[in-house]
Image (tube, rainbow, N blue to C red):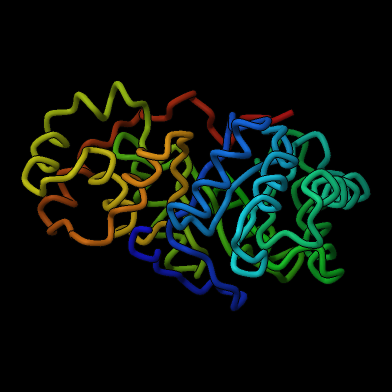
Length: 281
C-alpha cells in the first residue's frame, strides 16, 4: 500500500481525497476487478464515474467486492445533458443509484452546461433537492465557465462545491483556476495527463522527471496537486495506478511549476470541446 492520499474540505464541509481514479471505459468484470484492486491494493478512495460512461454498475460491483467499507469511499457520478430538465434529472440520479446499487453518491455533478439547451439551472436545482433528499452528499458541476457558475448561485443561492474541467500542461486554464480559488470552488482536473504521445515525448517534462527520478506522469500529477486541483487519472493497469498515486514524496520548485505551466497552448483542448458552445447528449 502506498502513502495515504491527503484530503481537502469542500465549501459544503464534505471531504475529498486530492487524487482519485477515473473510470472512463472501465467496464464489465475486468473493469470491476481493476477498480477493486485500485481500492484494496493501492489505496484509492475516490472513484469517478458518469451516467454516460455506462459503467456505474461496474463501479458498484467493485465496491461490493472491495474489503474497504462504503463510508470510507467517495463515489462520484454525473448527470448527462439529455436529462437536465428537473423531473428527468431527479429520476436520473435515482437511476444512477440503482445501477450502482448504492444508497447515496458522495459527489454528483452536472456533466456539461449545454448552454444552447439552457436547462443547466433547472438541472442544478434538481441536484440541490436530491441532496436534501439524502441521495447525494455533495453537488458540483463539470466544464462550467465563470458566467455559468455565477448564474447558478444567483438563481438558486447555492454554489457548486467543485468544478471538474479539462486541465493539463497543454491547457492549464490558469484564469479559470484563479477564479475558482477566489470564489471558493474546488478545481478538479479531467484528462490530467493529456495524451500520452504528447506528454511522454515532451523534452521539458522529460528533464524535470529525470531530475527527480520520477516518471513523467508522476511529475504532471504532482504539478496538478501543487496547483491545488483534485486529480482523477484513469488507468486499468495496477502498475500505473500505483505510479499515479505515488506523488506525495517529492515536490516541484517554483521554476519547475512555471516551466510546466508554460507548456499551455491557446488551442490546447484535446477534443476542442468548448463549454461555451459544446452540447453533450
